[in-house]
Length: 164
Image: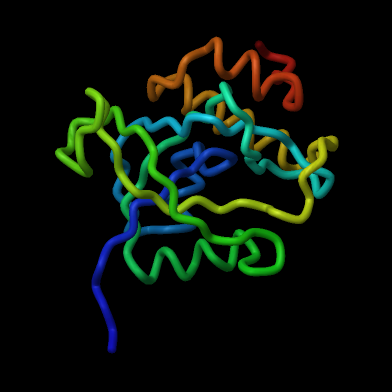
């Protein structure tokens, strides 16, 4: 039985780059900024972003609404189930839509998160990924993700472009 149910997606790596998301997932709807507590962002030994459980840390992302077709397309880009696995996580949502539930004064939504559970050690980024991540970082900053978060978590792996 086919379903038209939408999926909320937590995009924390190069999918912070809104143009890339629009090209990959043409039906996506950008919903705003979100945060996952007690996880941290890394570039793993495969050369791409993943997140790891880490008490006291946090990962910021953009929240997108995906159609079933877009989710299937994104599964292909993310290499499900070989490279990444799909998990559902409760994340804090800062956007304007009335999604989720309010707990302890925070709006919480359940979101799809792609996680590499095999390659969990730090590594250098793929050369092509640096370009995409720099576009993602520019959009992240424009979209309200804190600069301090970018500097602490992403910049140690992703050098700024020469023009900055």
